[in-house]
Amino acid sequence: MASTNFLELLIPVIIVLFIVFRLFMRVWNNSKGVKYSIRSLFMLPVIYLILSAYFILGLGLIQSILVVAAILVGIFVGIKLGEKSEIFEKDGKILYKRSTEVLAIWMVGFVVRIGAEFLTNPLFTGSAGNYTNSSALLSSPAYKAYENGPVILGADILLAFSAGLLLGEAFVLYQNHTKNFKNKKA
Image 1 (cartoon, one colour):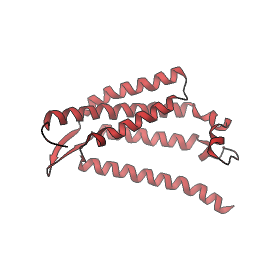
Image 2: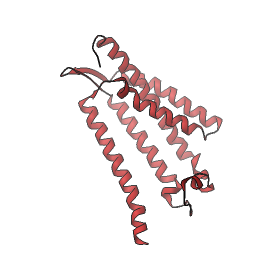
Image 3: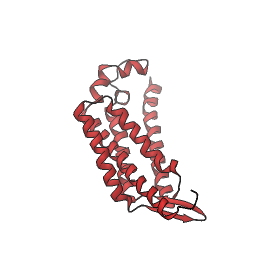
Image 4: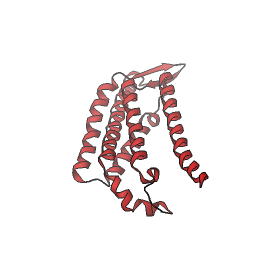
């Protein structure tokens, strides 16, 4: 019995440590510059857009409109903040740095979304009941009660805003690369 409680505590701690490590690495890499490639530039925004689209599937019309609006507003803000991002050449390599504001907003959105999942998901709160497989849990009333709650909706809107923000900034970096390094291979 004690080992079960230890494992229930250990898994979230490992997840949190992994997330903190990834966030630290993201900030560290950004401070030095990330090697420019279309893939590195657009991978994170595309992942966030896919996640936002996935979360829209369970939402009603008004909530879906809010998520899409957050993406569009995020793109506009990302374009504006993208002007503070840098693209430069160092040791024959083309590198880029995201703007500090975009990186900070992205990190806050990421932490809030993960935190909302921890705070509301029955898998982590202990209210999931006695389910032996995840498909039974995901169709359970305990999980359904949380999936469209205001905390998760707010976190999903912030995630969608972050997707737009990253996408808008990526467009600016791509344009700056095209304008300044047209003849150089990334």
